[in-house]
Length: 257
Image 1 (spheres, one colour):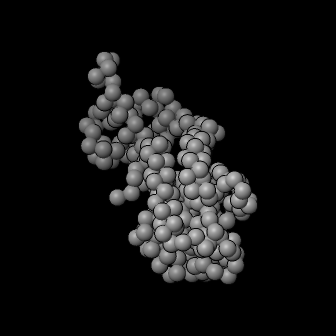
Image 2 (cartoon, one colour):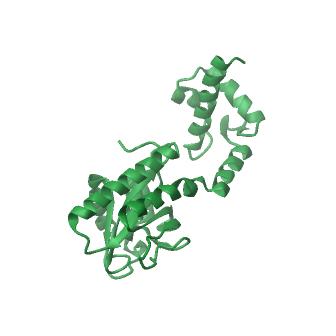
Image 3 (cartoon, one colour):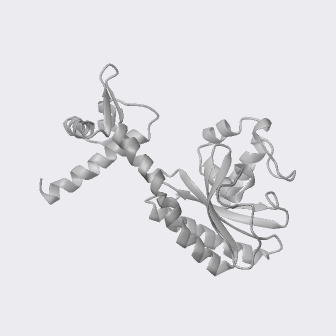
């Protein structure tokens, strides 16, 4: 196959895999062809190639196609190699150098955030946001930034009622309606804020890192004393948004509209 013809074929193959990954279950070949604007013959050919390689499985009784074991292995390898953390670490280090405040990266884990990278600022006391720590997502700046990037239905599923809300110091959203109002503000700002709800005397600003589908892959945030002047907070928020946008670009993500 020549170079000029192999590149479009590779692009179409990736389109098929990505499309399958975005669906909760297997789908018919005809729908794949229609959704991607591909000829049916091309779609069947691509699916056959992917099936032989183990990336796709065919369910003959259902006449549908889904992801295969090889696709799972690739996803597992991504987790083992931790490229998100590797790509984030130098950006967080530069953020700490530029601001003098600690920075961290977290991922959503149910209704909690799990901290995966922390860069401490010299001379600053250690924070609760150490690697491996979990905190209620609706209380943290990184968590709020990610929740604001989720579909409303998914947020409702995570926080269906008051019993789903955990507070640390008696402050923060404690009901679905309060959380909805907070997330509207996050979307309007383009970043999330948190002031004393995780640790009294400290505040944070955070922004979401988005994947190729525009879903939150992580939240990037920095923490600082709560007496920082407003103008300095705004400058800090701008740096956090820029760092999150750069990490989004580095992982091949789709920037927010």
